[in-house]
Amino acid sequence: MRICFLLVFILLVPSLSRAQIYEVSAGSISFNSNAPKELIHASSDKLKGYIDAGKRIFAFKLEIASFNGFNSPLQREHFNENYMESSVFPNAVYVGKIIEDADITKDGVYKVRAKGKLKIHGVEQERIINSVVETKGGKIEIRSDFIVPLAEHSIKIPRIVYEKLAHDINVTVSATLMPKSR
Image (cartoon, rainbow, N blue to C red; front, side, top):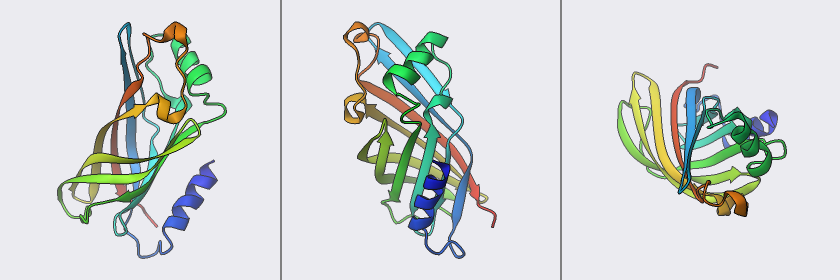
């Protein structure tokens, strides 16, 4: 899968030698399921990805099984086996383009929209995600908050846990990107 991810990115970026490539040096994703009978929170610090700042294109990937922090080990097991089926669909991937014509390599704070294909649970959906990008001293910090409706990615909620799992999951992404060394 790692090779496929890199191949997709390389195909999107034909001129790597002149590109302004930034790579995730630290990144995390957390989610909250705020249902009537239960609050579930989990996070992962295993976010990987790249941005070509010149072309304003990006590719991010997260291994689903890397989420931790559930209310119990059994809840984590159900998350991976019953809902996300992480052995069949091991990664979440978001590939696309920054809509705004902002030069995020220059120091400043930018509100941008990322438009791309978000693939979760084997289902790809086009999404526009609002993000705040802060650049300072060559380092890029990104923060995004958005909602993922489970039904849009064919994630089913069994009747028995219907009030313990939210239909819309709140997601927060935070990443630090540094210039990729060649």
